[in-house]
Image (cartoon, each protein chain N blue to C red):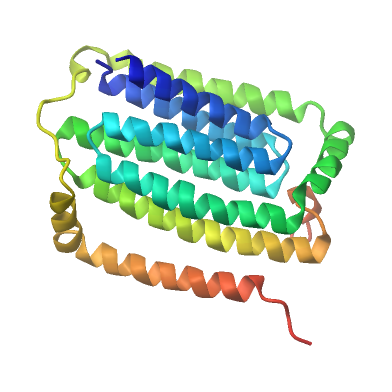
Length: 100
Length: 168
């Protein structure tokens, strides 16, 4: 049987993949997808701990995390569409007007 | 058991392919595969409600939203520019980012496996019934639930305002 540690290790690997995606890729949509990977890694941790503690709290928290992820995706994609209309580009390096 | 490793391998491989893929449409489809594997893991963890929600809300709704935007923006053309910029500007940034991610993995693995010992087995009892989750959600977490609905409303209004064309 896989143990709690196995699930936590899997979740850590997924989270690191998401982090690498945010740092390495220069495409706004792929960066948003990497953030989704990280959120899902955290969800897996919540479910595994909820199972280990024998309570349903973890599942309820995952429900809230998913709601926040949906709101984040909607607003983030709206911003991406707005930026694309302005600059015709998805590269975050081309949006540097606020950089000092 | 064997299913854990199968689902885990699918999730990790699909996530890795998501971030090395150059066409965003393939990235989105691979991420849906990864979410399917995660949903299988939730079933293994006695959380069928979350598994179903994962498929319906994540793979069904959020990823379709991403797919709409990718197709709306005609992104593959944009990726050619990204590749060109990468070759000119920062050929070494990618290796540095990869090394940092590897360091994060090593640190997390060390921290998680160092303890070892009794942290292993799952106990027998677990809450799987949707009724129990619903009672918890609408009783103990009722305030958070209501706040979440306001958050959704704000996100909806914000998305409409941000994506609207300015009328001249």
